[in-house]
Image (cartoon, rainbow, N blue to C red):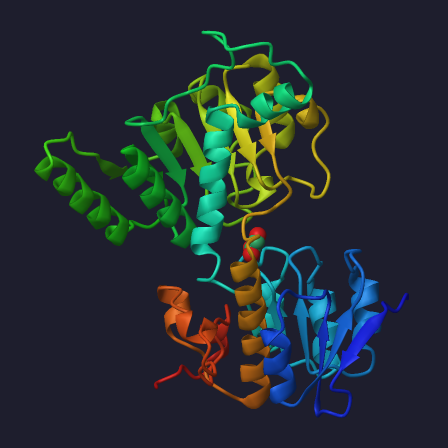
Length: 386
Ligand code: GLV
């Protein structure tokens, strides 16, 4: 079992907290040390596997702050719990790499970081949408290769999105933020697919439609699709913002791609396995007018064979939450989750519902609460009451 190199901060403190990667900013570390934590941070960029994490945990650890790239299986969570672990706090909003059911059975809270990456991730999805629709990387490659010999009427023609139809799969926090950006910014009609009705989003679009009419402009519309195909065959842009679960794996495969317009733009900034990537490569090859913007991949960090060669694919390396403000905020939330559980503080109520974690991110001392524990209800953890 190879022990990762660990940077140790505040060595004489009471609680031992393992952090499996260096995190941005320093507020997270100040929160942990002020709460009496000895913090041991794994060095280097290699993704830690189960053996390395267990070696870092050793005989005793009170908490681990870990990454979405790590395998938080039942066996790893059991070993953490047996070593005295009282929380696994993930530095991410998504937690499909964590066996939450096993954690709950062990009585182990699982933390995540919602709210701070909503707009950031939505903005990246917008960037991918327009990069793909307007062929920005193709133009960039042409310029760098010295291929631009002068303006031509039919060079690199893309798709206009203004007043077209937007299809959003998963209208939770990020999907709704992306929808508002695209509807408000580009006056697109919205069709969304979600198991839940998003009343707030529907009201928002209705109010915006009324605003447009007051300005003598045609309104925009919003409706919830009755089934996925209904959305796929209508939409000029399809953007995926759903969580990865056994039910959503390969939500978009060959039949769904065939249902889409052959000039559509498909964007994925959620989780790679929602798309059957091999089928996507085939589809992009057969339909050069179809464009895709990808932030996530089925088997990260690898790509399906052929994907990298496609001119009609825009590919970035899982950058959804990659702004300094957001990553520092995520680190703060991940540390605040660990501190709160170690100190016996309650769970912040707003996170699960509205993602309002702003009080944790300002300059003042954060509330004495855990910003977001995904299995708080199942574990019967006390809620903050002010
Ligand atoms: C990033 O993908 C996250 O889930 O935070």
